[in-house]
Image (cartoon, rainbow, N blue to C red; front, top):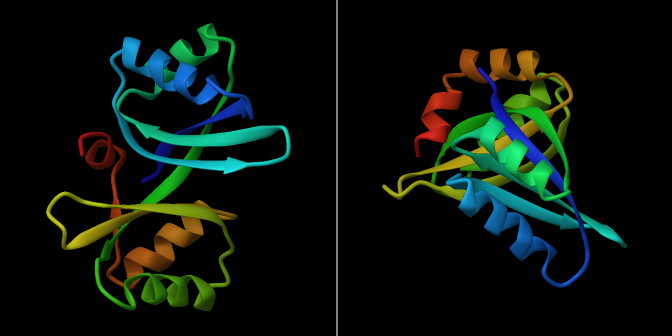
Length: 143
């Protein structure tokens, strides 16, 4: 029950982020979630999109280096301690969170957190056994 994420390596130069998002727009790809992290010369743009393969092709044709990664989308109550509860479950199971980013659903009572774990299958088992909702790829792509 993983979701495919695209990672795009982008030079820290004016116009490169606009070029990437324009390529996605021209390919009629909708962005569902994103995160941009910088390093000294390059940034890493992480994207959840509705059509992963189309997005990867469009970005590659624009000259970007693109990689696909499996991540886990978890639905979390949008209230204090929502994320802390999830992280406590993962800590108890000795699972390492490599990175995460989040967005709030339109209905406003839940957030969706995208996680990259050291062991996704073990993380999914720990979360679902504690009644945490792990979202399917189809559910995330159609948001």
